[in-house]
Amino acid sequence: MGTVGTSADDIAGEQRQLINVAYRLLGSVTEAEDAVQDAYARWYALPRSRQEEILSPGAWLTTVTSRICLDLLGSARARRERYVGAWLPEPLPDRTEWGHTGGPGPAGPADPADQIVLDESVSVAFLVVLESMTPAERVAFVLHDVFRYPFAEIADVLGRTPAACKQLAASARRRVGGTHARATGTGQADVVRHVKEAWESKDIAALVRVLDPAAVMTADGGGHVGAVLRPVEGGARIAQYMVAIADKAPGLELLERSVNGMPGLVAQRAGVVMTVAAFEVTDGRVTRIWAVRNPEKLRPWAQESGNL
Image 1: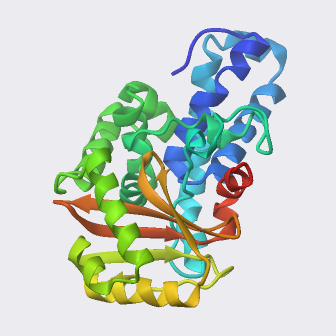
Image 2: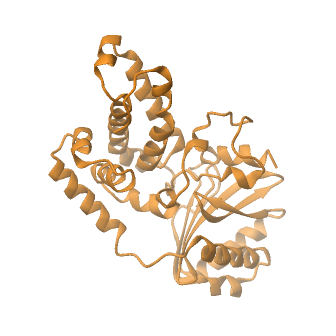
């Protein structure tokens, strides 16, 4: 894993890759940044003679970062049990949609969110599936299927044989498989636009038409803001809930924005982002809505809205 090199530039150059690995493993920008910083601290704590013995610092850093993430995933379930309501991954904005490209500004040039590649492996739908995996399955799957690391190297991370790691990845792959074909970005954008228009007009019938009868909406307020604690099930109930929210939030503005690389909605009031909603669309209808309202998870979005 990684490239050969021991210079300071070589070491620093691994940060982008490490952040991308850690975010996919943890679903949290903050935790990913902490894991990568911990890995770098361990590297710089090594004696110079030990550093020079390591042929590929990138490989070493990836292994250490992955092990740190594995430990965090192992304790995540206990932390999630104490979390108020449902836990959802931290959503990521597309900087280019907010009038700049992630250069120097309020977030700074080294903002970890800027370094994460927005592709299907960070879609909220995909990250939610990753949450259903065991920590070992998630590490094996992400490192092999997303980043194409060989099982021989993954075995060093997990402390298992390559054959066992291969089985873990296969088990994880089964969790990902067995789903219906999802909408493309363009197709999803059209459906999300219909949701926005129906929501703005408080048209329950129009919302019901665009929502699958078995749709599920999950909200994450983290106990910091008001949010439904249990998933809302059924297209009709979700439509009624959305209109009720609109009635209670005058002045709420809806924006069509990418969320983790897929079309989504951002709700803001007086320029402050209040909610970021991601969608799963199947056969032209919304099947899942994930609404993140926890302000601690919306910090990158607060920085973006301030640039409008």
